[in-house]
Length: 155
Image 1: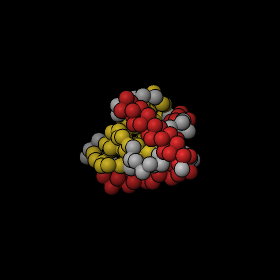
Image 2 (image 1 turned 135 degrees about the vertical axis):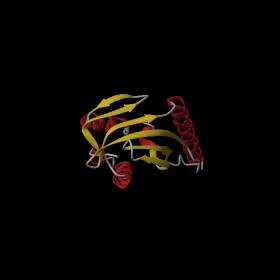
Image 3 (image 1 turned 90 degrees about the vertical axis):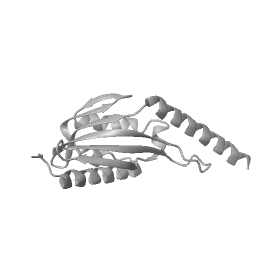
Image 4 (image 1 turned 45 degrees about the vertical axis):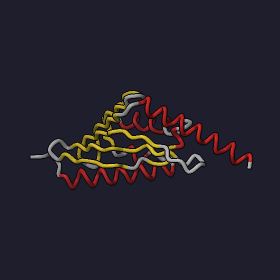
């Protein structure tokens, strides 16, 4: 018998997504970080492994203020699956950039594994993606933004 029911896990995932959206708008990551247990493990393949809510919070604040990364507009979810038996959510999160000024769409995705610990919290997150593809997308977005800025300046 599963430790947690699917509705509880799904409700937590939806609340987590809501907190992510608010954090993206406000740059205040406290509410988002509260979805992790004090001893959670966060594995980010390009940036490292972070132990505990406090370290996860410090990392996300630093990361989301980096040049280029701070121009990510949102992280919409393409799809997700709840595995009640394991207490896991597997999801495709899209990293969508702001319009660089030319109407272009720049985005890539990652697969995220979340492990539910109860009490509306995750004790594990792992983001799985190709960092080279992410870097290429950021580089293309930056070039598009520079071109749009030059075009606007030229009238």
